Length: 208
Ligand SMILES: [Zn+2]
Image (cartoon, rainbow, N blue to C red):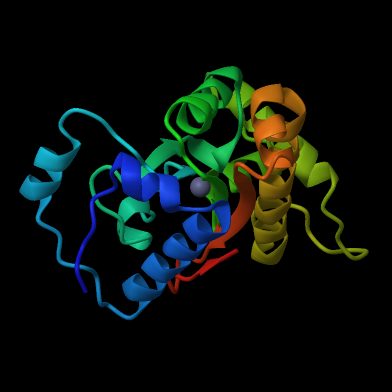
């Protein structure tokens, strides 16, 4: 398979649906251990003066999820915003607005993952320095995740933790749309897709 470095011409042809498909195909190659062979030096040359990425992924800092690797993408293909618990703040919103409105990116993927340490910390109400207020941003997802009577609502219950992570993705997408008129408008006009995904740290599978 020939690798392709994104240019103004190739980016313009990618629809929001196609952008998601490209990411799904990349994860499939990762799962099948069939990563594309990329000539990074050639990609450096092509992207030296400008970038035309087709996607932006907001994901966790977790070391087990090198985003370009698990989506099998190269230089100039995608923006990667990483923050513990894939939460949102004004600066991240600004970064996503830059990606979509100014750089022509066609899709935003908010990607949570299983066994997320930040989500576990929030579930356990962990307190530590600046981490405390960061974890507070995950609390709404905890409140909106149901459990059966008697079922633990802490990191000891991994199913609960993963459900909270998934709800957190959902709420982050809602927050993107409610806090950014720029991105909401682009999504409503069909210029971009904003979708959620979960990464399984055991298998490498990304479920959209
Ligand atoms: Zn995490």
